[in-house]
Every structure is written in structure tokens, then in C-alpha cells.
Length: 258
Image (cartoon, rainbow, N blue to C red; front, top):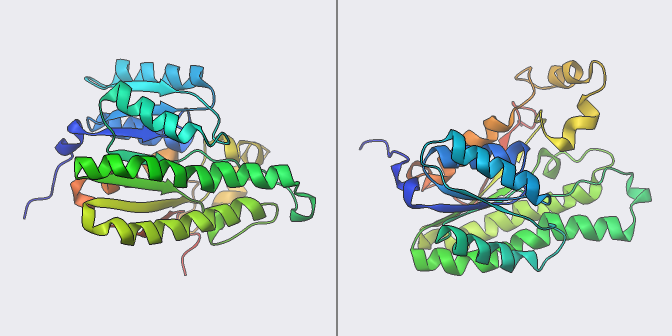
């Protein structure tokens, strides 16, 4: 049997949250390169618009639109899905990438910090799935990819609320993947490790020697790049990944290997 190509993505439309930079942007560019129309959401709509314009200018035939809004505003779930359908003509792929990480000792966490991370990192993805799945069902095909974290398995100090939210997202992925498996809709989670060139890791990696020290702890002996996650996302969105669902796949250079 021949290996399926990505040509089927030329008829697909994707919503990627938190896609103005880092992993989300790398996924948006990879999907656009395969012919998928993409809606790029970012809290700063000007950044999202800039990257959408770049995609349209640099990738022949690409279609990209920009969405703004804060991931802690749960009303945005319905708005983003509706805007994607209105601007692109449909929705087939949902990438839940937007997240908040408030690094602080668990003893010093405020109620507001806990609740904002819960809203952005777990509740919003569920609401987006609720709004997207009926559309995917009508299309008879769909892909949902949640972006988790190595923290869901190996929680570091100062990351308790974030790690708990990602662990819950991991559990939701398995449950929803099983539920939708018979409807040509797959649900998977990509769990990145130490990924360079993302805002979340910028402060910790920009000190002298920090990158070398972090890389030394990783079996692959290098930091990950956003494109390392984007390649996996493309596989999961293609027909070649149609038999993969309900899974959490770690992209961490072997750091969490057991």
C-alpha cells in the first residue's frame, strides 16, 4: 500500500491557538506548507496578523488569517471557532496550543494565578473541542491536537498548577480520543520537553551557560526546536497518522524516557 501524501490537507482548514510565535507558529507554517488554510490566534492580534501575512507571502498559495483574544477569556472559544469557519470556509483541525505558565512556589500561588492557568491551559481547550467537534462530525473528518508538556509527567519546582493542568489535558486526550475514534476524528497530545526559541523558556535559557547545561541533561544532547513538534503535528494531521489516536507523544530528546 503506498504511503499517503499530504495532498488531502489542501482541502482542510485549521485553527491554531497561541500561534503568533514558538511551537504554535511552527505548526501553522508546516500545515500551511502542506496546503492547509490556517487561522493563527495570538493574544496580540498584530503579531498574529504579521505572521499570517508572512505565511501568505512566503508560501505559494497559502491562506492564513489572524485572530486575537485572551486565552483566559472562555467566551473566546465560540468566537474563535466561528471566526475560523467564517474566514476560511470550514474547520477540520484544532490545535490547542495557547497556555499560561506562572512559575512560582506552590506555597506562594495565588487563587487568581491558579484560576487563570486552569482557564487557559485546560478549560478553554475543552470548550474549543465542544464547539469544534460538531463541525468536524459534519465534515466526516477531523484532527484535534493538544499541546501538553513534559511537566505533565515530570513536574518541576514552581510548576505545580501548570503541571496539573497539563496532566488533566493529557487525561482528556485519552478519553476523548477513545470516544471519537469511530468517527474519523483523532485526538492526540504532543508533549514538548526543553524547546528553544519559545517565550516560555526565554528567561531560563538566556543566562550564561544555561543552554549548554540544559542540553547536557537531555539524552539527545541538544535543545528541541519548535519545528521538532511541527513535524509530528503534520504527521498526526495527515492520513498517514489516521490510526493514531488517544495518545500522548513526548518530543523531548529522550528526557522522559522510561
